[in-house]
Length: 331
Image (cartoon, rainbow, N blue to C red; front, side, top):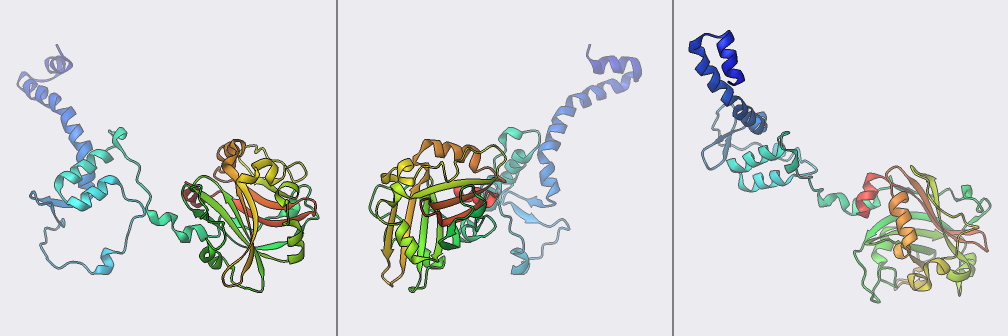
């Protein structure tokens, strides 16, 4: 004897027992239907017929469409798969499928809404809330260092996987349009373009030179092997970050290799002189592991400096704050 039969026998009249048995069998199906179709009722939209035509709750059949401004007033930043499907078909079953996916009793079927492509556009790469000038005088060994350039702008350049060809973005006249946008416009001045390459993107620092003679001295022959160092200074880190200060750091050529780094002086077609310094950061697995595990964590603040160690001078530097926008750019 089931619980319903026992309850009927002890507590209820005999003529009500069959109805109670029927209701007990319908509880689970009715609860399931309520969970599945609650999102449709919450939308306050009535679907008529198989065409999927949507009518307002007050059953008005006015054919005049609302003003265009009211139609485009709200645009969500992320669109789920089911919303895209429903917008394309406009049918009843698309909305039923959306209700099934959004139901709290079926969490395994939920899909993560993709981010729109607008979030990784040029405006985001130029936004100044994740980069700024570095306080290199606080770095050990650089308390009295000389600043050779002033930072104009820092960007993340998304170039994809670079083939082993001659047309690389840091080569002569390959990125002049980007350089001009970042402030490299005066032919009477000299500039530094520092490319720090990751997997499919690169940090690009563009700086205006303050001391041309000293820059010529520290970027001469064999500079990568004997003079220039790349210093990564953690300003704020959620986990202990392994990094060497300027006195202990190896030179760029000794650590990364001359085939993974370059320092070349260029002159553009319109007479702009600039020095291009490029370092493939992820060419060393130790650096890649450290940056992905400890460096690029949300909330961290890092300073990247290119230093002329014998001359105690800073060629280029920038402070990087690991924000959600930056992590999106580096994906």
